[in-house]
Image (cartoon, rainbow, N blue to C red):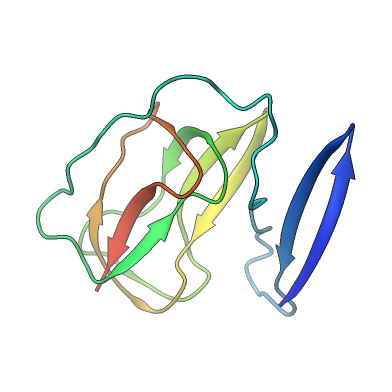
Length: 121
């Protein structure tokens, strides 16, 4: 993985790029721009038992689509859900192989950077 700092229209983004990723997914920026959605995040309780591996939002945005369901087996790099930020769809991927233990958000929820979106076992 390589880290880059990119400035767009005066907004600074720290971007992590994985080399050789077979999914073609782009990592989300670590820092959200100042024009991030201002809706308050919903406090979602984990569905069922939470897993030991957290999947967190890399940027503030809105949950656009949930790709995986609780109990589904996922491999490292598989898309678990998709966030929408600044009219861009950002895939949120599994950080390692595992089973989805909980999906802690719903489509349409506004989330902040660092919020737990799902967990894996």
